[in-house]
Length: 247
Image (cartoon, rainbow, N blue to C red):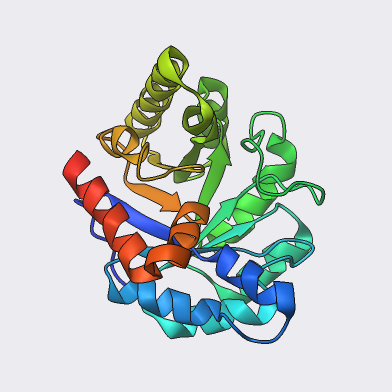
């Protein structure tokens, strides 16, 4: 059973994919992403994100049910807009499904989904997931045309890609930050709940967390990387502290 979301708090969703990446590097069952989900729940995380990729490079099919059973936290199931992934989502009924672009050769999700250019492909996917009671999110670049596409598709949530912001420096970063803030405001004005994620770290998260319309940040790779040095509990707690301080 998914927990009730607190609408007044900037939520932290923790992506645990790379716990599975380490496990799969050697095979076997260790480290177990289910245990990571339990730790996130114990230290105040608000949700678990997991991306089941076509090539199963990290999260595997059997992980999904185990993660759902491990905690009462909502599961945000990242997925490509394929028939296979829709069927898996309908079978597991996660709290949310975030539709992301996916190319087999990429190391990680590079850029946002072109919701504007793929309306006809995405519309039946959004409809099937929504009809099953799954909250649909679109992982998009912070662009007005993509927000407009989300409105037309009837998606209740967008996750704004923060990768360009995270990689920019100086004035370029300020420009990217304003773009994210403007698109979060545009989404909220149109009844869409804006989230954000990709490339967020202790050093750059606070400016994003201070954007008042954002309801959730999804952070994974950095937290798992920090956990190697300080433990997953400490890495999640530190991110939570920084987000709270920004608000």
